[in-house]
Length: 271
Image (cartoon, rainbow, N blue to C red; front, side, top):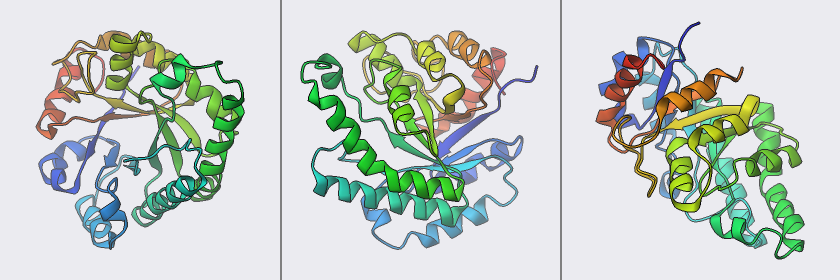
């Protein structure tokens, strides 16, 4: 059985140093230049053109990390939801121009919400109503474009919360994303299960994974092997599902991307 092929989350500035690595196999790529409001509110088309030129010959799947700073898709404030809908639409504009087929969005679940689950029964319907109002247009547009919105765990303590939310939303253009460092933080600091449980919970709905190492205390985005995540368990869980998620090395120091890939390759886990 062939090993899963690793990809990476990079900016345009990082592409030259990783060009050969990206072309040695059909490696998936996530561009992260489009998360900032000042980029989306100005002319980003030259960035897309630079990306297309730099990626000539790239055979992997391509996508972006969508905007996320300062808001949630579950805001109870309709004025805030209007802003969020606009940001999501801007992200999809970029995907369309780039030819991207995935966009990362963030989970709305929080540690606070987990600890107050059931305390205010009306919040369940209010929460779902807010998310549906925020995401419906983006789901429809993404579906028509052939783009998958991958919902990434952030503070999620229960690995099934996003699954049930997306199920309630009808799964149109939606898949699950697991960020290993976020899951490890939730495990180490909030009592959530280990990282591999998040993979198992996503199952065949897993469309995307952010691979980063961490210490279970904070969102480190360390080079693989520099933290305490048990990588054999993560890849064993991946091997038990039929989904073929994009495996994206998302590191703070991009110089660690290729060494991380070689580390996992040496363990016989990926290539």
